Length: 302
Image (cartoon, rainbow, N blue to C red; front, top):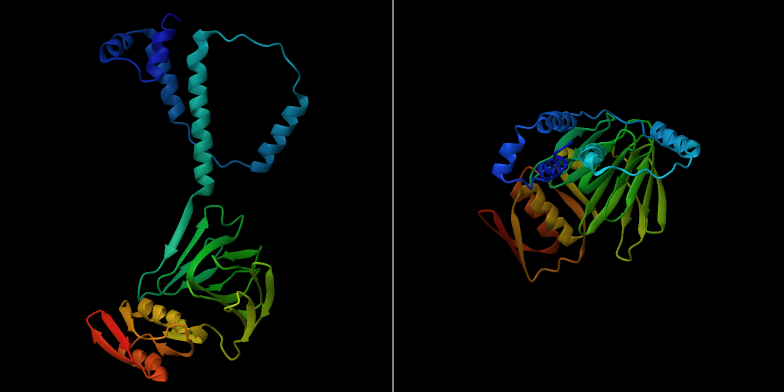
């Protein structure tokens, strides 16, 4: 190969226009251009990780020591092409198995989604779930916000949040993970809830809530077959008033301003998500709070 230096410059995009024009007339360019183009068109197929690992270990065991080989510089371009193809395969495999799917809702919006394993998830307003392409192999997802899950029976199903995790096999449950609220309710089957070193098992009709001392406590959820928010009702059980106002903003897509209002008190009750003024009365009358509505802004005051 007479043009090894030129080939190296070509592969590294170091040629001037004049040099490249001259190089295109050589036999080497015609031959190795086809090799590079063929390498770029390689399509990946799915890889059986266990078989690949087993084969790799077998090769290591049977490999014998060989005398060092001196590689001629004239073959340098071949190794560059091979290295490029190997890198392409590795990167593509990584992206194939680690790409993520994100499902989300906006303000004043609830949506129902079917997951790859045919489990169903309903997302409350301003909520997001994210799961990997390999979800069917590892049923695990991330949740920000609130969601109701109807999990199809099968392998372990895990919901991770910033405040704790929930693990089940096949059941129906609700997870609320907001800035100032974390609770889980079980409507069917069994649910395992973890927060730090705390771990609680829930059965049908039971719930758990994170309280001020950063501990999980059990709460009853009897006589309900599903979360009230699925029927456009928001309900709170001893939750901080600030979280009640935040949920109001999410359901009605409004901005609430408080003047001299204690937002750290606890609130038990709810509001209807279909009528703004009726909902406002439901959360202000118990505390004798006045409200004023102006466009998309609501001012609360004493």
